Amino acid sequence: MEASVNLRPSPERDQGIPPRNKPKSAAFTLVELLVVIGIIALLISILLPVLSKARQAANQTKCLSNVAQIVQAFIMYENDNMGWFPHGAIKTGPEHNEDWIWWQSDRIANIADGAVGHYLDVSATNYAVLQCPSDDVNNRPACIGATFTYYFSYSLNNFFRSVDLSSAAGFDNLQGVEKVTSIAQPADKILIIEEDEHTIDDGYATIYPWPSNSSGVPASSPLTNLLALRHDEGRKTQQLDTVSSSTPVPNLQCKGNVGFVDGHAAYEPRSYAHSKVHLLPDTMSLPWRNFPEIPGATP
Image 1 (tube, rainbow, N blue to C red):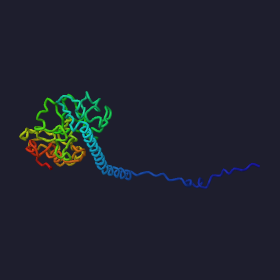
Image 2: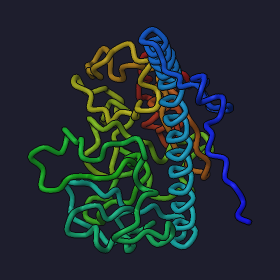
Image 3: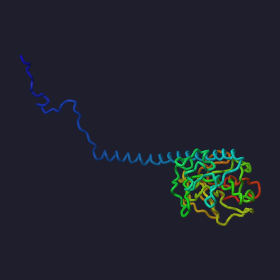
Image 4: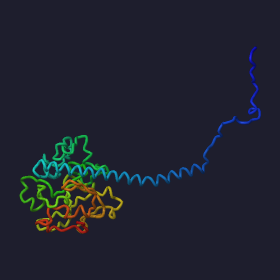
């Protein structure tokens, strides 16, 4: 006997009752949607400056690490060369095998052969240690019209470098010194700075703003290679760094990264980094003790 099949519709269908357990459809109203969008926009406006500051702080720390590695490489070079400094890597001078950095476009492929290059383990495809992560290395106004562009972020204090034998006579009496042993209080002397993108044009920096003669008379138009403020832009009071005889170093309160002769690095204000106390080989000896201090310096 065949089983019968009950084809009678369910009571729910008969009475127009929706099936049990079927969720009702839901939708945002326009007002609710606008409220959500407003909340998201508010959160973004709050978080973006925080994230930007965090990113800049991370870049400043990475840049400081770069500077520390560079000054340590200088120490290794000096130890291997009886205390002598490398050459300054100057744009106007001849290229030297002992230039501290091989930066010209015809030498970047062999950047590891620079005086401190192999101590930093750099190569033609890996030289990030020589570039600040916040530095736009393509923004180099001081290199416009020059033969080569300096695509790096750090430069050497011009008082601490070797010079050509043909012009070395009297160098320590007029400008600086060629050996680390000639520096008084090396832990206080700045060797390397993170240089401002508007003034950097080679590996050699006139950080002390007055290229003085042997009597310490400042130049009427100071030439200053400025400490970079890219990590501290928010505290600038003078948006354009205009250098003059009355203001040889603007925005003195803003900070940048510097490396010292003894191998340590620090985040210091321009008032410190451009002070003669931290740049000249020995401020107690002639001729340097006659050199004037910059206005507003913090020795």
